[in-house]
Length: 543
Image (cartoon, rainbow, N blue to C red; front, side, top):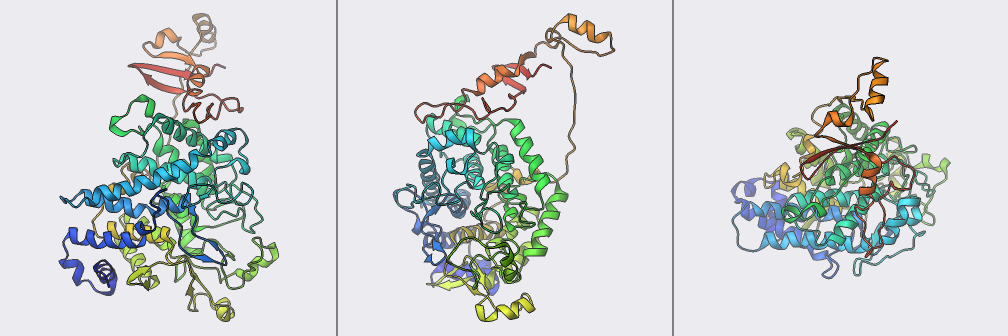
């Protein structure tokens, strides 16, 4: 057994003597060898992309590079790089790990930029057939399935990329190099900007619960989109070396609308799913998208109370995916057959990693230890490494007994070992749990501090008259107003002027990205207060 695994397993509850005596650098070296073996060894040297797994099973080919899986899978590498930064070491670990992260994020960027025409078209149609692809070829970054051959419209995946791009940039990584790339990212912001009203296939890629391929409005997609819009708004993608041209802009109305929609959906996931573990990254790490702490607690309790089992959490109730009795000859279910999956839904250790990180961010040491201990028996030894499988299922011969007495039967892991996404989050949680990383390291934008208290909005109204004659006329009715000259030095402009400015933001002929999303699409022009060249400007709509 290699030194990394020896430390990792002994510090996981089986024994504790090693963790007491190892210095921080030695512990990082142990984690480095483990992450090298489990994650970085799978990274394609040309594209930088990672396969979701190396498994090819009856349930699918996991060797493709899913956008969502890639972002989550590289988080442990990013976390380890941040931990190495704190130590005075000269082995080049920090540089190597940081640039492995950069290579993956740029690999995803290149894959998406090849589909820039889709990003432009999607602004007008919001059609699933015009969406970015959800997965790419790991070796080339090319598409692997046609527009109509997969549920590609997964706004949470694009949003997750933008969210972590913002966090990684804030942590000091230089991921975006050119203005063309800045403009493409700006257009990705337009791409997710209407998540609040765009039904998609969601994190599980199949749409509604019965898998008929019908997209629906999903809280998990709306929530991560909200988090991404908030995180990237005003961010300079060139970091400290940038200027105004490399700053990303988000319309405040789009953030407000995603918030309203999200709060109206939760604790549900969608119209067809009354509860779904996919909302865990929305209420906790990495999204921290919900502002209302009462709603956060209610949503978490809903997931834990209805979906948590001994081996992880179910994705959602009556989920037949990869159960022993699922018909592998078709993707969809008939509504009347969902009942047969009740109590035998597969349980995913992945969600215990989310709950572990969530407890760490909330400062709940007791619950963090609970989920850490729950994860230990789920790890499977393979070639000296302890790995998390994708899920645990009820064997067919035990189904009747499990239905009669839920959580009574021993479950088996599936062949997808490890699910790199789950393994990455597990390792990230261990780095935080052992104080090798602080919460601020993996959340440099401080999003986890936003939901500590319920904030009441403050509404203020100011009335402006276009000229003195209108001001005098309104005064006769007892309505006090000011004219634009009276509010100087603030300059008052029409919102259409600001719309003309936004029309140019993100415009790049080299990628054929031409217009901001709201222009010509029936939406109201942007408005609000802005600072420009030491001047304050107010853009508003006349009525």
